[in-house]
Length: 235
Image 1 (cartoon, rainbow, N blue to C red):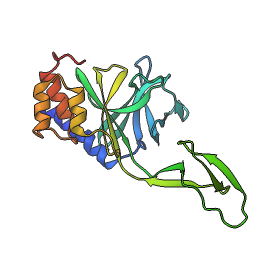
Image 2 (image 1 turned 180 degrees about the horizontal axis):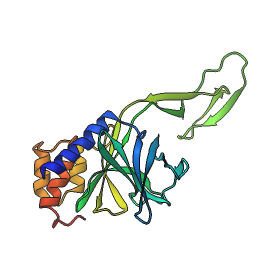
Image 3 (image 1 turned 90 degrees about the vertical axis):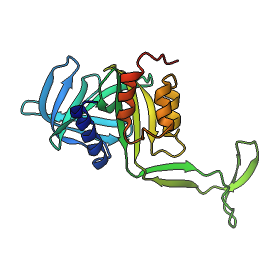
């Protein structure tokens, strides 16, 4: 890979590590559907798939722009424009915001999640009946019927694990595929993910097995693939 491109990719990952949520804002370039570009002040905020792009300048009022209006937005951060684009992930009906890591024959994108995500799930454990409190009969998944108290029972779990989801797509196509997720419990590991997606590029798989590639430098995997494996047919 050329030194300039390598420096740019390194900058992206350093910025990502220092800013792990969708909360970027500052001097921006809004890219419309007709490919025209507007300079101003922009912001990306939200969590998971609920992400909004807001923008304003001297003539445009500050408002939220939907995916049907824009291709994406470039936001200046530490003297470097981070490039966010709307893409359709794994054939989904609605596009989501991802960040460009590298554009090539097979391109790489990333989404970064972090924060205390509160999950609320019903507990299957019966609640002890105390005194003369009202009871109700419920049926479990296995068909067993049990009597429980009518007090609500919810289990709350706080999750605060940074998660990186990486995607690949042909050139600048609007369609991209999930490649690998880092930081999600029980997710498929780096080696298994690489071996599944790049299974027809035997030399790449050999390098993965020999630990010549790591999960924090995925652009090296994509760079190798683009230089050596494009003629390999994926099933």
